[in-house]
Length: 118
Length: 111
Image 1 (tube, rainbow over the protein chains, first blue to last red):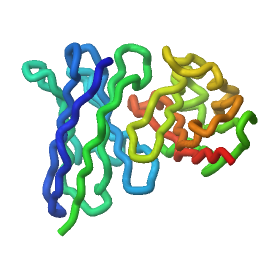
Image 2 (cartoon, rainbow over the protein chains, first blue to last red; image 1 turned 120 degrees about the vertical axis):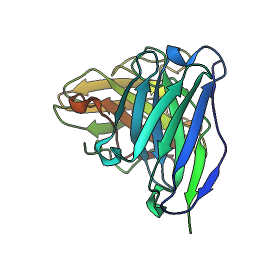
Image 3 (cartoon, rainbow over the protein chains, first blue to last red; image 1 turned 30 degrees about the horizontal axis):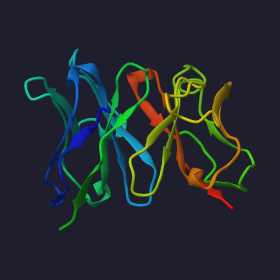
């Protein structure tokens, strides 16, 4: 069973940036569409952005445009999400989710807690 | 893109059936057969239980079923079991600007 393996928890200062990684345990990153989804404490799921690594096409939610970069490195078989100008409201668990062609997210990472605090 | 609208909570007794609604717009739920449902237990990652409105991934019980009418999708769980107690989220492709959107989530309590 394929797993998506994410980088560890981060603590960041307001105004800084964070970069979270996501690597499949099997197969290549180009076999997936990877989305990033976040969940603030006690809150629901929120779509952040998406990359189709084989094509290099990215999209992000309007509220994050200009503040997020989703990318993928085929050489390291890893997808990334970088969020800039962090504020306390960005404190959340960030999940990567993989679509292997079903049009939905069959595979999920374990989540990465990003805490923004001064 | 606003979040899809779900009831905050639903409840049912073991063996009963419940339905969770997910209301969107013609630009998302109503415009595409790309509606999924996810189950999330506390502290865990979401798990896909329905995709493309009505399809179940391998290994998902046939007690879970999905449907759609107009701009509203629905998830029905029949024969409720204690292990079904979780949060449920709908998801839709948004089309314009290629965005995606989740519902606000529904907490299912099995009484």
